[in-house]
Image (cartoon, rainbow, N blue to C red; front, side, top):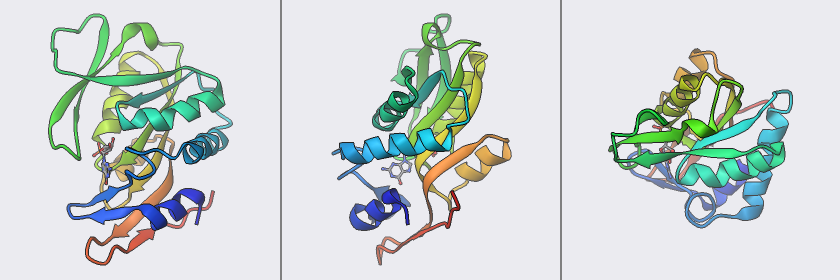
Length: 195
Ligand code: 5GP
């Protein structure tokens, strides 16, 4: 088991509705040394890629993307959730349906911060059905940027997102893949990964 899987086993809580709560260390209270370790691990896994920007989505993606960008020594850009629809022109826009809140948000990135010369590493905390990642991919592609890879802290392997993204041919790395979790027993099963 790697460091993140161990932490999930210790402090993660399985909630009904296929939600894994990790708010004591990952997306509400944050364990900064764990974040830094995540940054180093993604840097190791994408070491052979030329990365010019790390792209994520607010809010909880930011905490993961920050140490990753720090390791690569490049800027981090986060897509903002926006209610305004009158922004096309200066902004790349994508529609993202939230898995946890079940609502749709437009997410935007200023055209100033992403362009055709960029080689992007997309980072997020969770992967469930893949809407957040698809939105970020669509923003990178609207910018004419190259998506070099995608890094996820926790993938829920029993939901379709991971399969969809890998089938599209993207290099997706997830530090922990949960293949099953049970809200009654609290038992979490991880996928074996050779990395
Ligand atoms: P997707 O777009 O892949 O369906 O869902 C990914 C987004 O939903 C992530 O950005 C994350 O914020 C949220 N999310 C999905 N599943 C979970 C979960 O089990 N626990 C938590 N805390 N967030 C989740």
